[in-house]
Length: 212
Image (cartoon, rainbow, N blue to C red; front, side, top):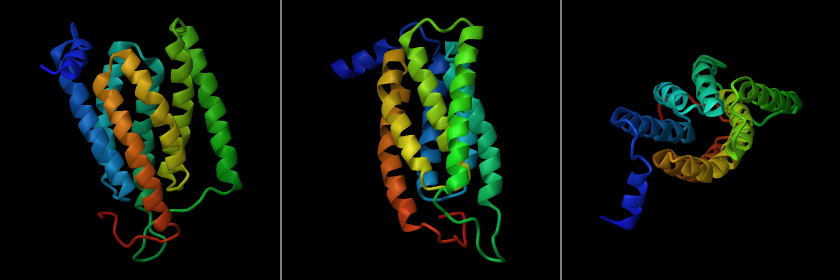
């Protein structure tokens, strides 16, 4: 067996088989969700809901509270985003991709700070502030909270937050031993870059169909 594969599977020694299978399923639907987002396809939300539901359970088992809250938040924002994306601005066109305005930027800052503080409180209350990963987890949680909110609002800047958060998450998840999740975030980074470029071409153009 290849040393790389040996190293990957060593990370899962002692881990329940059902958790390994669930992680792989969650990663698969996570890939689909990000890909559909890049395509401005409404299927981003049902696939995202499946993925986040799985990871809420997995991360609860691992005790990664910040990451668990991220996925719980994704779940709720997926429902909100599903509603926003399917709103029509006229008889034949749906909500277009736009840039953030001054109000959106202020709300982004508020969401970031509020999330940062909330996650710190959660770690303190549950006495999980015992590793350097908690600091990084708090940062990525705040970044992803803003990114998800902006995606639900169809703001192009959401991709910038995803790119930053994904880059940080690759080594973080690798260190945690969640190899498949680390690989997922690596691919997410690449898709997010292409997603930003794709959305830029569609900026202010209201789509006539949400299945693309």
